[in-house]
Structure formats: C-alpha cells, structure tokens
Length: 265
Image 1 (cartoon, rainbow, N blue to C red):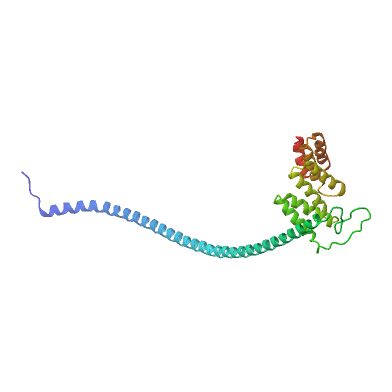
Image 2: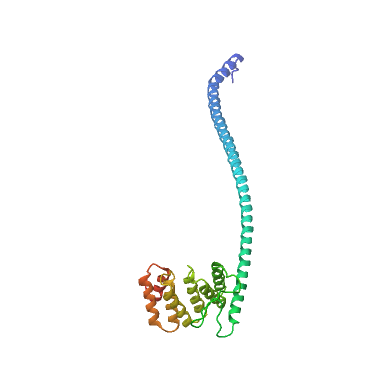
C-alpha cells in the first residue's frame, strides 16, 4: 500500500530538481547566444564587403562609360577627318586623271603629226640626213618631262605597250639628258619583252647598257636581257648575263632572281 506524501515534501523535491536542471540550461543558452553573435558579425562583414564591391563596381562602370564616351567622340572625329581626306584624295585623283588624259591626247597628237610627215622629210627638232638643219618644234609647248614619263609608265601599267613605247621614246627624244632617261630606255625594253619581241628587247637593253653606263638600272637590264636571250634559245648567253649580275651586283634584287635562274641558293 502506497503511503501518501505531504504537499511540502513534494514541493521541496520539485525545487531540488529545478536547481539541478537550470544551471545547464543557462550555460546552453549562453553558448548559442555567442554562436549567433559570431554568425551575425560574420554576415555583417560579408554585407559590408558586398556593399564595398558594389560601390567599386559602380565606380569601374562609370570609368568605363567615360572611356566609351571619349572613344566614341574620338572615333567620330577620326571618321570626319577620314571623310575630309577621302574627299581631298578624290579631288587629287580626278585632277591627276585629267592631267594624264590631257598629256595622252597631246602625245597622240604629236605622234600622229610625226607619222603624217612625208617619207624623207625631217621632223621638227630632229636631225635627218647629214647636213640637215634642226628647227624648233612648232606643234606647241613640249610636255613637261615628268608628266610625259608618268603617262608612258601609266600606259605600261595598263598593258598599253605600244603607247608606252611611243611615250618613252618621245621622252628620250626630248629629254635624253635628264635623270629619268635611263629608266625610259629600260621600260622600252620591258614593253618589248612583254609583247614577246625578245630580239628587240635585247636591243633595247643593250642600248641602255651602252648609253647609260652609270645607270642604277644596269642590274635589272642585264637580268632582263638574260631572260630575253633564254626565251630566244640562247641559253649559254643568258647564263653569262645571270652570272654577271650575281658577281657584280650581289646584293641587288636582280641578283636574287639571277641566282634562282642559275639554281644557286
């Protein structure tokens, strides 16, 4: 049979149990509080870092936008400058084309007049038979030497070889004592060679070698003469020309081409 306990005794027992339990609960709450405090501090630091990163990103973005605006303005200015330069270039090209067209017309007129003279007559400004008297040209002012040369070279570049030969020969007739005379003689040979007239080309290159002994076109003329001789089947003579270029002008572009012809490195 269970003996009933007095109320006072039950109260004291409950109090003892609470006294034993509360200290551990208090210690557990304190640890959790400290852990939460550390987590909050960590999160606050991360938030601060994120805010700073956002501010830095905004600053970088602003700098990039400023640079883009500046570059856009610079690009616009460059486009305007290029447009102005293109317009000037077009005007210059048009002027040059007009000059070349005028020179070409004058050259054709001069050539036609010379061809229209009766056989045996003496062209103005040229010596004919022995004792013939030279007379000044009466067909108008002579074409300036550089313009005449440029027109003849333009005809060569456009593969108008007959016109080019006429132009360079006219240059040699009028301006044989100028600095470009040897070049004019060289391009006569180039035109003839381009037409497959190899014998005439050899003659033209020989004229340069004979009449312009100090010309800087000698290496090229020697090499091209060799090419023409080779095309004519005169291989041994061509080899002599190639060797001459390699030995006398070893550092020239013509020497490099001549070595290839000779099979040398």
